[in-house]
Image (tube, rainbow, N blue to C red):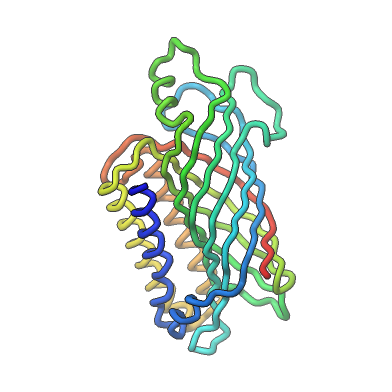
Length: 283
């Protein structure tokens, strides 16, 4: 319980950071009264990885639902720029049973349930009327329970012992996604993206907190750089924001795949890579 409470506090701190953006016309009061419930449903074709693991995992697919609240607010500079934020609870299943691809004899089958809390944000590019494209970045803190349907050969004790650290227990992790939301109407959007989810063997509070602070410091520097572009060229700023943040997250998550508390060391993380598509409905 203590770990969950501490992580929730960290989430509230991080997701509240956007309210301090000087270009967003003091959004604090606005976001105390969010009034746009939203549901996002998605499906993804996924792959399981564990650095240094010799056995092969069977292909898996992801079914995912996000429930939360979204808002889009014009900035005070009146240059057509707005910011979209979707704060959500996430529930998903990553399973061999959901995957329609051909199965390979001897590969390890699994089913993983996860839940988490996160945020999606970006700067929409209007195409006229209610049609717009949102290049987005999302970040989620997750708890994942791996349930192996088959295990490595009992003679391979190294693989067996590593896998048992995850099997049938909830483990803390992080997920990042980058992609596009295409809004055809004000209330309905289709989306496509790439997601990397890292699940860690153990939750080491101080190392994990330090790693998260390093990660968020980098995002803060990107935000400061992007602001200067958004003030002059909103559409270009939206694209630069998308490219820089997702490239940064990709690099960070690659490092954390090998050292879960990078730059403070740690064991390799259990990864799920997913190419996703879905629909978002806003009320």
